[in-house]
Image 1 (tube, rainbow, N blue to C red):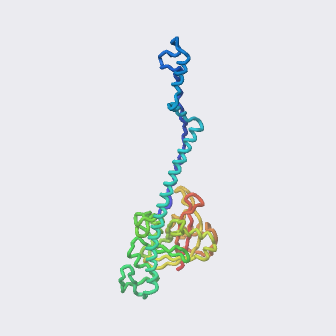
Image 2: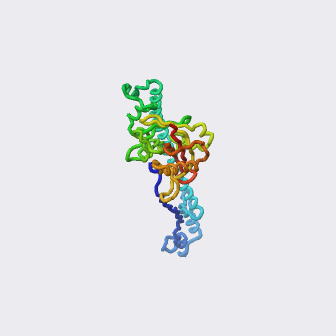
Image 3: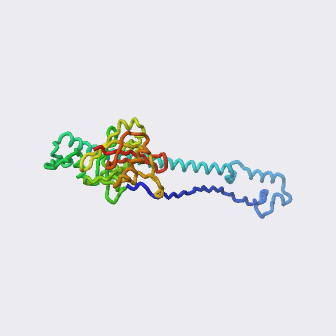
Length: 352
């Protein structure tokens, strides 16, 4: 699995542009007139001979009860009133957005748990099949539990292999990893030419945010032709699934209780013991540093010791386990958050 790229980072600056609206200027009003029409002389004041009684009568007609006064025009929003209106609109929009996000998040969580439950149910069925093979069948016969048929005259490899039928049923399953006393009990997948195919798919190829354990494209477990190092990637899930428990190895006490691992392949079972535990990261391509994820095959003692010496030096504690040229390793890698693109790594040595 490709775990490194030339990190090109684009930092974008966010700018928020605030503008305040300007109220149009107020036009000059018409001159106040007394009881007359615009453009016409006020007869009550200009015509002679009118009595004060007529004036009083005219004034009384202007304010007769029952006639509503015309409404005053609304005052334009100014200053803090305009800001308050904007604030209320913003609050309303944020509340609506939060409600939508809550609904979408709820739907995604329901879908996540539903998919995880379905995948776990299917995995448990495969685990039970493997246990049945170990408990019930003689050494010279392997049962095809999936089809219900018994395949006689099929020799079992020297090492017990309870997942023989699984490998036949699912060609992309290249191994089955078990770490004693943990939740790590999963198939390991690899699809030729599509290294990230199972990054967010389960072993049946169905969408699953937890993904699957993935055998790096440069690692080989085929036909007994194992590379010096077998690298397996897995998501660091908060619910503890996949490699969600791997960081527990930060504790030396935890290591002592979970130091042994098993990897089943078509060839049979391979046993491992943890030799180093360390944290690292995905580096720039041009960085001249030790990159554990680039080591797969040691054809010389120098290549072997470059990997071995570095993992022992990086280890959070001394496991007391040693290796020599010709030994083979199993490396488990998951995301960590102590630095950008951090990784947490557990390396085990094959014991026989």
